[in-house]
Length: 450
Image 1 (tube, helix red, strand yellow):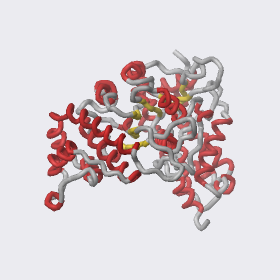
Image 2 (spheres, helix red, strand yellow; image 1 turned 90 degrees about the vertical axis):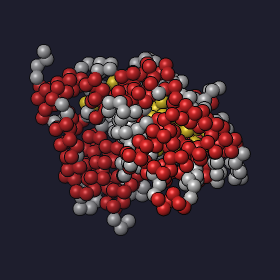
Image 3 (cartoon, helix red, strand yellow; image 1 turned 90 degrees about the horizontal axis):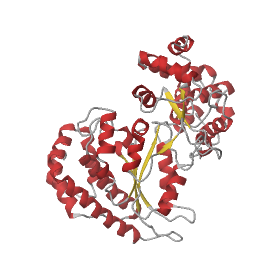
């Protein structure tokens, strides 16, 4: 290997979901089943179209789990049936701070048509959406493009994605399509019917099983911060997932939506009533024991396994000095993206391998600066109170704690197991290990209880 640091750096890209080669099943360390296990069980029993919510901390591994689900739906083990997955990364289409239902519907239509063409060589044609696209094309096509061709579903994806970068065009498209929204919802279900029939008739390779139906997967929808001109944050999330639930559940297709953990912990019962089941939450990889903070060996080994899988033929002992690796694992807190980010940054401070402890120390410095300056003053006392509490629970719906979950100053874990069915499923919370080391936290923790 000519440049092992370059190999480590690129293999540990924190923003790329795990490929089949990199994926590791951490269900035991997370205290829950995998998304694939959970979803296939529901899918096998559901008579109607299944509308499923999936949540967890940003960066905890949701996209990797969705990629794994996509692979398994395509090539399931018996007795499960084969499904045609459409995995839509809404971040390719939607502005996180300015999104609306028309944006989402256009993204779904574009991605559906593109996936059918790429995966099974089917050109999805639809007169209704072709008419709508050509009504609005003047808002986001150049003058040259307008003269060259009629907009079709075949080329819609790249063109529609332009709207994310052009707020003026985006608003004009919304204004044109908003009066037709209810009809668009009806027509998109007819489009699903056409797509469903097409994939069931798709040509098969030798040994392939036929597709049973479609599964639409919307990843990164939980990152939407501004929706339908509502106040940024929780109000917009409630508008999207609660107020627009009739539209989201009205899709005549099996569908998975990623939903913010903050909303789940604030309005979980309402979400459960509006959708087919309570949201499935992906916890952190548990690397510490509840209360004692002693290392949880199963979780630590899982994190080591995730990193080892990324490095391939390069052994962990070759890549890191032992104390450097332990430091990075400890201060990741079981957060997969943080671990990968720290490893990448450590590579930039190392002269070669093994990566030394000094480089690991420098790798977390930017995170230290972020938390030490960004955490509101009135949070420090509450963080200290959580840290010394016997049950390590947070007040349900408490706005400060919801913010802490969102900014990762507090991490959610589940013990799991086969004992008490209530105790093993109940989440508990720990202060981010980096936050615990900061002076403001230590000062708050040393204050006598009032």
